[in-house]
Structure formats: structure tokens, C-alpha cells
Length: 144
Image (cartoon, rainbow, N blue to C red; front, side, top):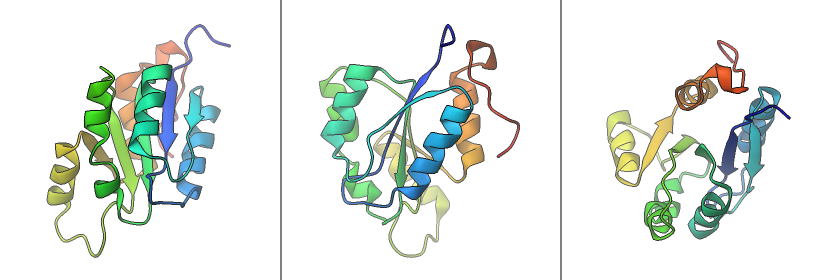
């Protein structure tokens, strides 16, 4: 084990059972030097908050595909506050129902509940680069 291997927490929202994107992100992160705790599918906000309090990850990445993530995760920010935890929250995938006509509105709605919306694996890579400089063990390629 390297001196510092950053831990990233992954999960799929409570009403969602689509695991493929979350698993792909897990494999990608592990390949590039991150420790990963993947809570899997149908994960309630309280369980995510408990894991953050226990494990103290550098970031939480949520992968949603059924479009209900906004309602599923609306209480996570409060759950984290109850546990006196603060961690960057990221979400990717199909995060809303129906056609997305205004990406800025989607970003704003998720920002209200503490999330940054990611459009691609490259966005996730860039978010992690900002959190953990390459000198700390994790090595991310220039592009996915």
C-alpha cells in the first residue's frame, strides 16, 4: 500500500438498481490508485451519510440512471450535517426524468442539495485531480 491512497465512496440512489456505471467507475478508480468503497444499488441517504461519517472519504460519487436522483438524495446534505460531516458530493448519469431542456437548471437544482453534476468520466477525473494532487499516490490518465 502506498503512503496515501485516497478513499472514494460510490453509491447508487435509493430507488435505482442500475449498477453498471457505478461498477465501471469503481474499476477505473481502483486501477488508478484509489481505494473505493462501493455501497452498491438502492442505497438510502442515511446509509451514505453513515458511511461518510465512518470512513471519511475524500469524495462521494453517486451514479443514477432512473431519473429519480434529485428526490432520492434531497435529504443527504442534512443527513451529513447531522453527523457533522462535510464531503464533496458528485452525481452523474441520467439524473432527471424526461428531456433535459436546461442543463443550467439541472445543475442549480442539484447544487441546492449539495451536488456537482458530472457529464462524463472525464469530469469525474478532473474533480478528483482537484481534490488529490497526483503526488499523493493516485495517478489519473489525461483522458478516459
